[in-house]
Image 1 (cartoon, rainbow, N blue to C red):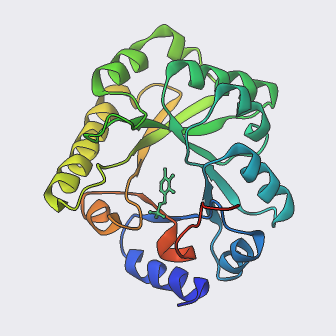
Image 2 (tube, rainbow, N blue to C red):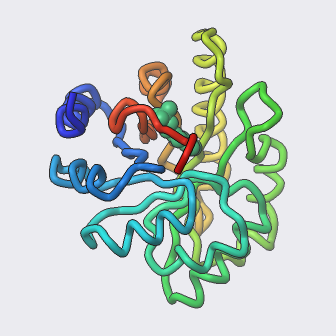
Length: 227
Ligand SMILES: *Cc1c(COP(=O)(O)O)cnc(C)c1O
């Protein structure tokens, strides 16, 4: 199936839900991103800063770029002028840097806090206690140029669907808890839950996802081997 067909199919699947499609275009050439754009897709997700910046310069200006991959602090400055949403805030220090660069650019940057929900030890993110502590801190309240609009999580890479479902459900319930505790803060407006990828988006939507990050199911398998 073509990229356009895949996008239309996802739009159909998600219609009637509160879930938006983030088309994850990492490693794919600009021509394919343009195809997605021409099919109406406006939210594109990338996981490397340099690639994201290059693509944003080459492609239409009304694309909303989402940073979904691990972000190094020394690279925040390159995306701060234009990034639409950062999904992958995984430490207070990183958010502090985003605050600094947002201020310099005289804007507010929307972010998601990445939460550790998987069993694997390799995944980045806050755990529940760290989140509560951080959101309660004075340091956080001073961050007036960022807005925490939700949480992001990645489930364990396992064929066990019950495990995946449990992890997504835990992110949803954490979101509900944090909403009631912190949504009164000026820089908190929790409404988004970014969860679900090509292999597990259906479960994620059933468990309350508001953003699925779908790459290979739209653009085809990625090839990391030579380029
Ligand atoms: C690559 C990536 C995705 C998309 O993965 P697919 O399995 O190709 O849909 C989603 N989220 C993150 C954080 C990624 O790095």
